[in-house]
Length: 213
Image (cartoon, rainbow, N blue to C red; front, side, top):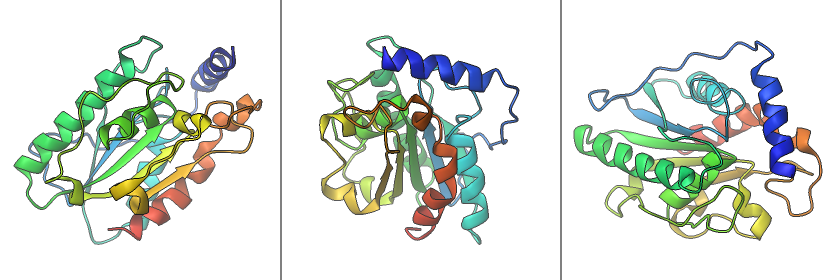
């Protein structure tokens, strides 16, 4: 019921005509210094994501100077199907692998909101199975590429409601925002609005990432 309420509220946000910030689409031929790989939340509108991806990319452009940035919107359904998060997981890993091969000096910033956080969790080896709109891991970023992931930025991460978090090699490079009362990432949370308010954390997330690059 809570996830349906969140999705209904998100639809209202998307229908309010709020302007989205533009993001430069990355391709295999784009060898920027940093590629921002963003997985949007369930049914989230926007280029990279109205609530998180777009404002975070804009904040990163302001915070990280002297480096070129590109962005990639993870290609996955972002719906309630059982294979949605797994599809995103595979797309993240395929994209990062292709970019790493084509651009030897490129580094990555991974961004995930809500179901998109599950997608990123899986891609760095932390299973989201059992979480809201989660899935088992289907692919992980290879060990040879792992050092090139500069930062991981997560928002409303559903595995948090299971008492899990990012541990291991990515832990020091990860910031994981969970608003008080957010029912998606906080067990027992009841504030649907909290899950829709992560735009306010874009600047803090960008500041964290800037310190890692």
